[in-house]
Length: 273
Image 1 (cartoon, rainbow, N blue to C red):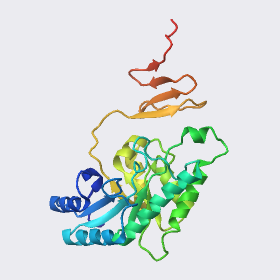
Image 2: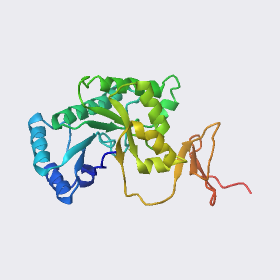
Image 3: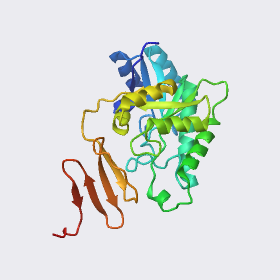
Image 4: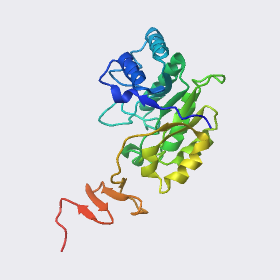
């Protein structure tokens, strides 16, 4: 088994100039750096190949390797993270996200980075109100469009990162998606904090994920309160030993908190005695 190589993400250094951020990561002793898109610091719509050549040279001079290109879930709309997603019901929205991932592939190619990561996105009200739309099918089509940007002989792999609440939420969701896509250029990105929140047995889930995992996020999140947020549905299954659940009722804009210690109902109307 090879040595674990630690990297640091530029997403934690967005107050710095990008080249200065590379120097800081190198000075701290990390072997690698995650290159994260950012509207102000490292915007792929503003980057020319000459600047990317400068970045590649700075990485070499600093002695740090580009570990992964993160295509920035918050890039388009910080107030509505992950939107538009690869499964946006609106074709124009999907095209924007596909274009961003393709730009991630281009940046990876120019910098000699072999991994590009993204998330699936959430089921939104637009999906629910249009039952003829299959978000899973949209996601598959979008990923395949992104993969066509990679040449068969290139050492570039797209990664899906399962995240709590997303369509691809669990490690098993990610593994099933990889099986459907069936491409050697599509693998798994695991975030330990996300796995802890989404998996009843995250250790077993990590073991299942290991053969197809190419990238691992380790965050400094402290132990806290695991809460799942769901909309009103006919068949809800709760496991309060795993996570409390906040149920939203859109017809009345009320909430029900299902918590083993403190169940609460939030409503504008007073409760009946």
